[in-house]
Structure formats: C-alpha cells, structure tokens
Length: 137
Image 1 (cartoon, rainbow, N blue to C red):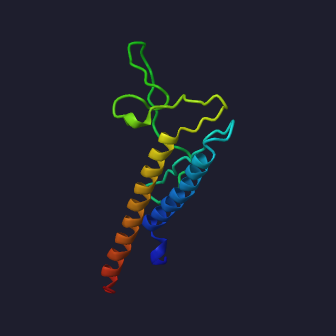
Image 2 (cartoon, one colour; image 1 turned 90 degrees about the vertical axis):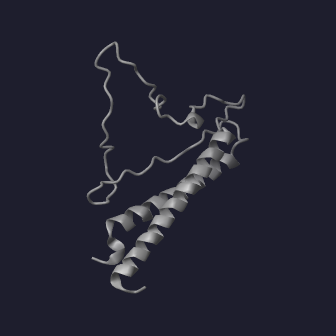
Image 3 (tube, rainbow, N blue to C red; image 1 turned 45 degrees about the horizontal axis):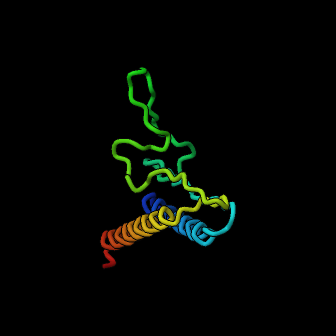
C-alpha cells in the first residue's frame, strides 16, 4: 500500500474533484442566467463509507417516518429546525422560463469555494503529518 492510497487522502482527493466539477456547473448556471428555458443543475455530494473511505453506492441514511398523525411533518427539502435560512427553496422562474437565481448560485459558489479550501487544507495537513511520521521534516 502506497502512502497516497490511504483512505483519508483518497476521500479528500475525491471531495476536491467533486468541488471542482460543481464549481464548473455553478459557473454554467450563472453564464446561462439569461437563456430562455434554462434550468440550473447541481451535483449530489458523494457519500463515503467511513470504514473504507470508498464512495458508498446507496445513501445508507436513515429517514424519518411519520408514524402518528400528531407528529409534525417536515418539508421534503429539509426545511425545519436547523435548516439554513439562506437555502430557502426557490420558486422564482422568469417569464422566459429560466429558473436560475443568481443570489442562490453565488451562495453555492461561496460555500463550494470554502469547502474546497477546507478539503485542500486538510489534505496538506495530512501530508505534513505523514512526513513528520516518516521523519522527512
């Protein structure tokens, strides 16, 4: 096993590649903001198996069930307690049929950039820790 095959490094590389691809899609959404009938696109975030670092095939998540009529149901989009108020689902569609919301796309771009920088920083710190462990520093 090579040092670069460690699960944490593989996960961080995959995460950074995902952020690069997502940034490209966000830029396309912004570039096509005036095109009639254009629908914005986004990528789903990769889910990792915590034991192996591999990308999980299924969601593997646990969903909430409404088992009694007295329970409070939440919206499918995850609105509710702890939801990010900046992430209100957009129903804004221009008369030309374009559904790009520039404010929402700019928020996505900013979040994507900061998450990419975090992953890159963690990758660099992991490499630094490996160098110290091997005695190369």
